[in-house]
Amino acid sequence: MIKYDKLWQKLEEKEISQNMLMREYGISSSVLYRLRYNESVSMYTIDKLCNILGCDIGDIVMHYRD
Image 1 (cartoon, rainbow, N blue to C red):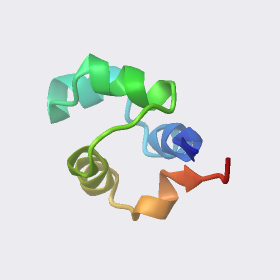
Image 2: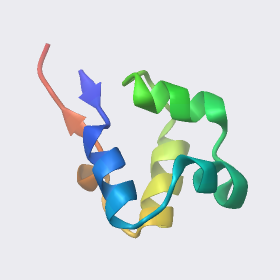
Image 3: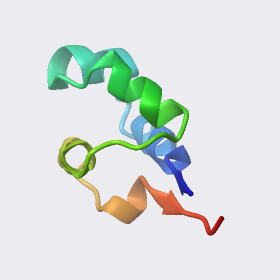
């Protein structure tokens, strides 16, 4: 299972709101919904978030064995 709990911590740390992600960076509300509920998103989205936050994948995504 993939979880994005660390993403929300990183956003708070960088003082970037979900609204800002949508307005300034073009992240759709449906993508934010999928992230919030740990659903699948594309690697393009993960790459874009890493670039926005200046971090690596492991800083925002965690893998847990089922």
